[in-house]
Image (tube, rainbow, N blue to C red; front, side, top):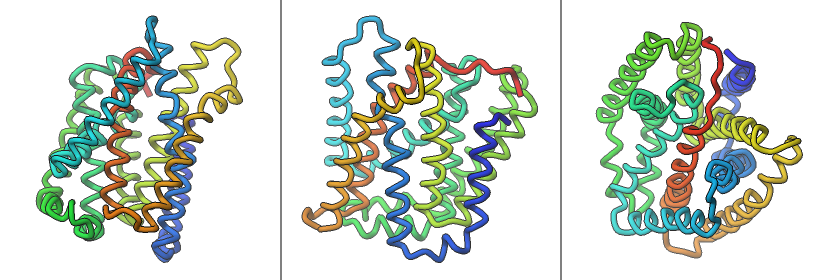
Length: 308
């Protein structure tokens, strides 16, 4: 286990050990803590997508990049309006792949079919476990939205239990396949099993929003930020942590400000759309183009560490 994973593990275990106190927090406090963490740790990891793409493309065009990036967001927004249930399912699948994508970014041949299936199956274990362990809370959230109430049928215990078992089995088989192909070592195999078990324990013992926030900010966003820093350090002369913060700041600040305004609007009930629907739409339209950029990023750069 590398130093980064050791740090993430220690933080997660400490937070998990406080689960009685965390569970006793008022729901508003849980929401506020999660919002703060996601705004200041989650949002920045996607704030330099344009820079990551620019460093990979010799003929980079800001206009072309922004057109495609914003175009994908607009198309997905239209799909949400016209087809909310299929859009929700697509978001869950896309998020599953994206989470697994970052978890195994450092594997050799990181863009072949077996790696992509491993990324998808690992992410599906994660999200299906999150839903399965907090099913009543998830269903309640969706039933509060008139638009998404019809989509609540998706969240059936037997369905998500089946998805969880099948995706977990596939993940184990694919990890063994990568072990056989010598893309990972025995230590890495047990490390991945331990990390997945730890995350599922967090999902089981902690409230839905807190559990997701711990994963998203610590295990996903911080990991991606670390890789982005490594990548840019290879591309930019005399690169430093201060320069990295300066690159992250502009779009992070803009996104955080817009998010705060959006949260204020949601809490004032000015518009007649449920909070959960707007949050899902906001997250999904950001995730779609970001996933493509990160895919290209990992295609050109992934850590070639010794097998552990």
